[in-house]
Length: 210
View 1: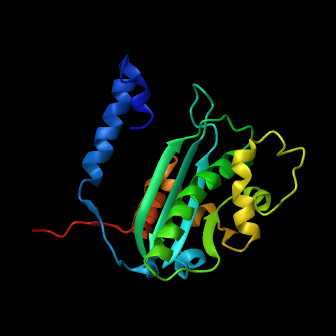
View 2 (view 1 turned 180 degrees about the vertical axis):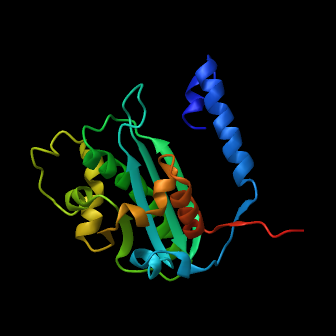
């Protein structure tokens, strides 16, 4: 839907065909509903123990064939429940998958900062450091480094603000396999079995029959 929205002023046949796929997807998933305080045992071992408070970040590198821009996606959990999610096109063109994942991590960090302040304001349980997960090891390494290398010197300084929060111990970034990354569902079309697995981890369950 986000991709199709770019052509709402002047659609052509290919866009209408793509819209039909979207409608088929909506028809096939209209029975799903978001369940709170769901079954954390459905989550992979890599994140199961963190689902009381955590965030996941992912990106799809250069997924738009027209402008070569990537998609950032994130999801946040509280008390084993999905409470926040996002899928947006990145403003800058990433020159590598690492850069795209780093931009996505920055996007997720903005939400993580707000979420952390929200928990502190209401005196709710707050992990220290607050865990953020990514499936790109190079992006995690970049976020934990205070030095600028030849591979990262072109990245706008505003994307490096997350390094300071990691250095002071407020947040931590951890790698997980792509197969365990629930935010993957927000960045790209997925095979049916992987889509179904991520739906379960996100707490999307079929509505009970009347």
